[in-house]
Length: 283
Image 1 (tube, rainbow, N blue to C red):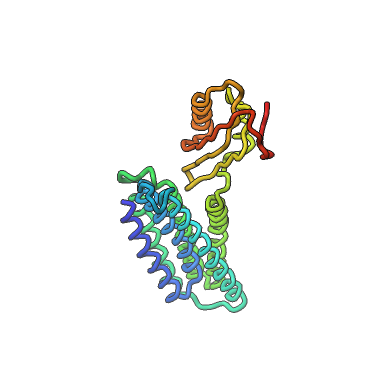
Image 2 (image 1 turned 135 degrees about the horizontal axis):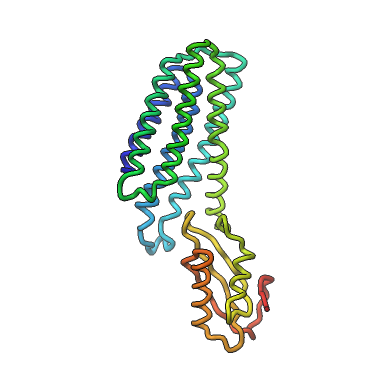
């Protein structure tokens, strides 16, 4: 079902770009940029399904899940470029209005509305429905864009004010850009192996320090391979007499229960070993 939704949305994306050029509608081109976010969301959802389960190999020991992050980052950068073009073109049309074929604009947008409804239906069916939430939300948001273009075309048809077209285009651009910025920010954080959103390293460090048998820790790293695959690595200094296996298991259990960190690598050290790291904590 996800694949069919991708095919349908991609075909309409091309049709909307052609329609925007033929009918001279900047609003259609802006909505096409928004439609591209749907295509990207569908591609990312497919990659999460197809590549997420692919086992690591001797060449890529961490597996292939970061491909979906690369695709999302590329999509965000591309959308920023398109948005700049739309805004520059809109300014030109405010100063020198151009004729817009409102009927053609409305027909293309109406087809887009139907495509969005069909895609939403496809994304709520099938065995992979749980993977489609973000893609479903993107299609739902694009449906609002299609409605905006239809209303703009009707307004142009009955008033003759062609400056409505660039206004609708800018409005759609402003609707897309904040979410595009969030996407670029989050994907950049993943690619830089930053601490995942929602986690505070200080709180994680304090929670580990509170586990029985832990005297301190250093070299604590928390990162993610994708949005929902968090990993953790650290050096734990053991209290005198603490059992290595029990302490390690207790730290891993705490990370799973409190922070949903399933993969953790813990190196243990005796309390008599020197540590030069400033993060070394002693209670």
